[in-house]
Image (cartoon, rainbow, N blue to C red):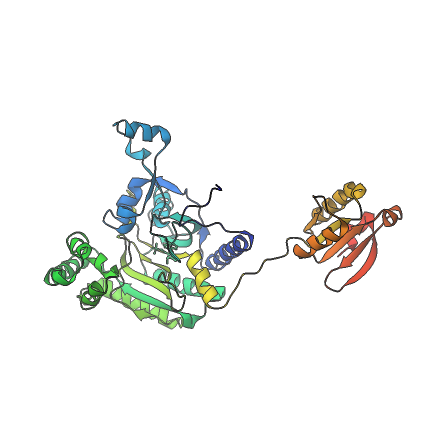
Length: 433
Ligand code: AMP
């Protein structure tokens, strides 16, 4: 039986792969105008980074990580032995922890330095239950800005993300930007206690998991999709009533910058996002008519304690990530399809096989001149070569025939204009187009 992909993983075939490259290039171009530079970190990090950075009690860390152990270490474990904690490796479930680790490890933000503005693109891995818009390997583009806590950083990040979505072609009326503040280590504990007390009072109506969450990580209950829990959590205490003066001021300033840029948002006091590292600003962009339960196309926030959590000095940070596959779904919902592109401009055909060497020579000269070109590599009649040229969407077909070649000429057909002309074989790469 043929071997097929496991559920939750996808191939990107050429049209899709080309679209992905354009997608990343567009992000790079826009983000560069805001000062963001690319960074590439490994797809594997020590497990401990995610446990400490994202938080042990989050769904991502407790249930969804793909942890990889080498064959040798697996043997040791199965034999009852112990392996070093550094040998427990995990396929990254998100990009922030790895970038922050790199910033700390390479001291990219020495004391007093300008903020490090970094962007990444690549696959992330989460062992979630696959469904439309929810994969086990998916592609994110993200940015991180480390070393500045000013609200203008958060605002320019949000504005930049919305600008990217607009440039992609996701209509502004088909998405909503939700914003909230999660407070800081000063004001959040009192809020967390208030939510816990509220949940304890409503324990009967909450699902078992939320009752468990109430004890370990009560804010997670805001993400529960159980209708009864949703209804109860709708009336839970609101973080905005608990923010300290500094957090309130920061939040108000972020909103003011975003409004001034003409970007519409909705304040959502229930927005907590799934990872533990957020402080102050959190935001999420949801697609409204993507016809999919997985409608978050991007989101992020501020994480002022993460660098310290992974062993660095106190370095404030802000970042976001957006999902390529979810953006594709949103674009499809907006009527955008991805077309196959021509894979060559000139197809070099031969009247018979005796001219293959000359065809090979011409196709090389065309490529050397920067013209996408291809020729026949199979056993095909001229008719069948012309069909192939059509399938490849070649604009021109150069037909090599013994009589024309004897006179140093080659016939060139324009497949769009339906015209034909003869050009000198030796000069074809210069005069053909
Ligand atoms: P998160 O780190 O969960 O906020 O994810 C950031 C973005 O990545 C989301 O807004 C989605 O667009 C995308 N994303 C997250 N998880 C998945 C997944 N399992 N499959 C596809 N896209 C995802």
